[in-house]
Image (tube, rainbow, N blue to C red; front, side):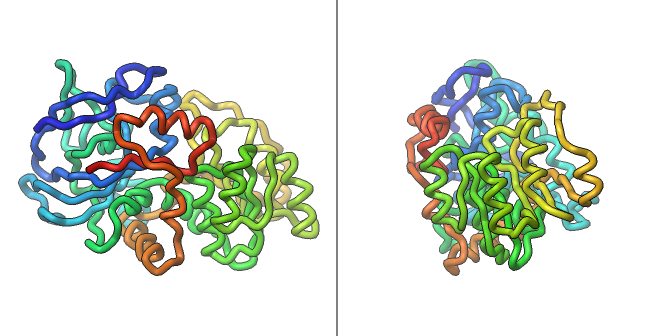
Length: 369
């Protein structure tokens, strides 16, 4: 079928919105008509080259919609099902999945390959096979994806809001609850208050943190952090340190979560200095793929028994946590509507990312007819 998509033809260039050909679903695949796609910073990493991926590629990895067609052998979905697309597939059979770590599913090794999980590409344009971000490519109103990437949800859940839990919301909330292990009464510091950071704040609040320090240089984002549960505010890590010392009576924070737009090695040492004995630093932000230099005090790490932990998808399980978080949303415990600063049509995708770069959005969203 013919459809339209935002294609990245060259690193450093803008997204090109154009007509493409989309194949019918093969064995194990479904075609989904999307309602919306979030504009996540991870797709910006494709454009800058921070994340290596074959080019050309259709971006987008936050989407929700309705199954329109089902390929041979699909057992978990049928036409008419409402689904959220998880940017990490979960096969349910590999060692990671079977031990409760679906976010580390073996199929996740393919998410930056540009290929579909069943092999090859399903999108074609200008004589080229086009890859898809995270085996999804949600910068298009129609996608063909493997059933392991599509998670059925209840029909009454608003699809435009549901797309957000496919990456940003679950990543942030999980970074606080799962990776950070936030407990009632804890002090949590969130460094970077964009689309992931404000959800880390939400997660810390849901987990019962008594003090949540938002660290963010952009005034608009710092103001928004208050709406999601932040109790204290600082414009830099340096400014946050005396604040954290004061509010904890010198004990420092229990958890600090790095959710900046780009993770760099120079963030580790000052962030580690924000947590006290047995404190955890969770690194959720994506770094350039060649970033390898990190400066920190090993003595501080050892003597105070601190911990630095990486986390993808907030260490959450897609098939369990996506429906769970949507239940929290419907129950009024989780804010999704408030996350969406601006909506765009597909042709406005470059404006959406410019607004993100300019610090004008918490989460921009593309809506489809």
